[in-house]
Image 1: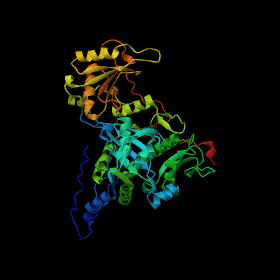
Image 2 (image 1 turned 135 degrees about the horizontal axis):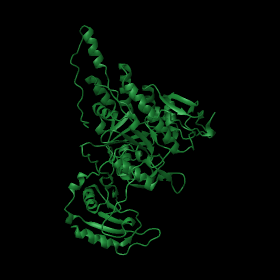
Image 3 (image 1 turned 60 degrees about the vertical axis):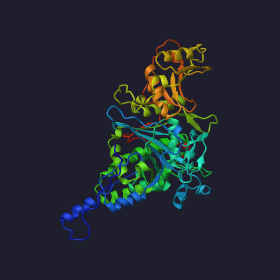
Image 4 (image 1 turned 30 degrees about the vertical axis):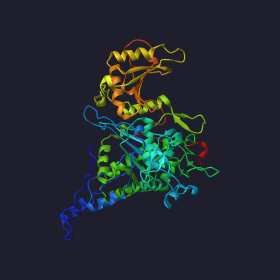
Length: 519
């Protein structure tokens, strides 16, 4: 996909003249404004006049894509055999209270002009062949490791944090730190981000005439102590816009078990419905309505430089429109409660499985045709086999079995016999690792790691970036306790079961209202 700014040509004619039939046609052509709209699908129509094009470009706010350290970044996604490349876009909803309008909508006067937080985070993955789209949300109070980030405006350095709330990342230099946090956690390369604040959500909902949402009972999100978003709706489906739209997206008290997980589920329902509304609006013949959409959307958005013009957003919109609504799947990252019971953390195996499916461009709806194993071109960038340093660790211990004595040495010898003469056993460690893994510390060593995996028959999904190692490290797992040939376990490419999964074509989704918040 080309996101190179082309820019529409200036109008062919200027000045007065009779407004005959041909003039009206030219006027109509001129008024086909680009409908650049936020959030899961940005849909558009054709070109705009040059001056107005510049005006829309001026509306867009831009920021750096990734401000983390290079070592924490994910490698760029490789093209498939047909030369097609997936797209990964991070959608961020900011709770910034940096102006009077945002403060009025957000409340909490004591937080005026404090560091913004990324209260909505959704990773949108568009498959390489544009046949499907996956959206993965992360609850705002998920505890993650936030990498070191450097503010591009003043060069202020924010040190790395461990076990910090993910929404704090935005206040550590901007959206580029939220992107860096996602890449460190998931090892998924993010191509772009799109961010909107309180006022932007309200204006977008107004511009498209409202977003239909559904509740299974009357709801009033309000407690006697003043908690709650203030959302008040009757049972059934209601088109919401303005402040009510923002209340829906912020509602925690009143949906299901009053948790942030339920809020993410409600956000999915809203986004699914918004997709359908945006697609309907994009086909409208009303120039004024399309113009309002373009104006509102460009004023509402902060994007990375790679999306920093109307043309680039329009190109992106065309890519997203190729995905059938019925092939859009939204889910929440598998999670479990943290030790303190007040926050959540990624559920180790299930969350990593979802991230792997996205990394390997496997549709979350399970409707992909079985993909043949693809050899990555990254392996072509590997050093010569006898120049690759490999540390081999013994990870064969299990809950019931002792580690196999000398296993690291045996496999290191196997590697030496295959031409990896710099392979050596680390005889000081004996860990418990269920499946054999190959780890590498930085992008420049990924090709080496993949080369080792190819020779041993280890699947690419078991090749992982890790800052816990200093070089290519093979951890011989409990699945390879004997023999000289590794037999990789059959991988399950199905999405972990979850009630927090939506299909883009689902028009019947309805949020369950907590009985304590009905009226």
